[in-house]
Length: 191
Image 1 (tube, rainbow, N blue to C red):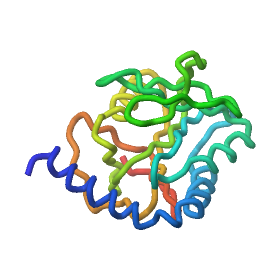
Image 2 (image 1 turned 30 degrees about the horizontal axis):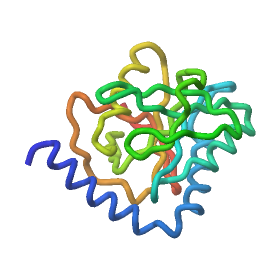
Image 3 (image 1 turned 60 degrees about the horizontal axis):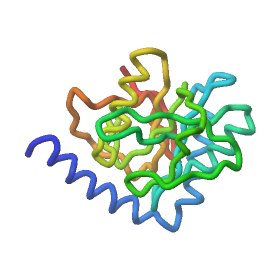
């Protein structure tokens, strides 16, 4: 089986695992947010990216609250187009998202652009080496590649422990995470 086919098999399994947690998402997301701010190295004044959860994804709303209380600016991703990296827009408290592509809610096009220093990365599956599988469009891989070419950033998973797999298939386009964070633990990825 080739890498795209293997990824599709894992995506299906990961979606099933995550769906089994649906009733626990609020509680698990609060634990996840606390692990993120307690362990991930977030410099004072850092800009941190989050996202708005869809379905049974880990919900970053508690994380956004904790980060704002610590004085961090929050940015949210906006799809710039197929095959392009994401743009990040400053998310002011109380701002209303607009409908975007892929059924997502996202920042309005006219919100200020600002690159993050730390990214809370959504995913479907991950492994201990920091490889991840998303929904298949490659937006975060292209984004991490673009950001890493010009600055030091920290990319951390934002997911549940049940989404870990023994090995995630990857190729030269897949960007590794720097930190693995879930509701049970947080640890840096070994180089």
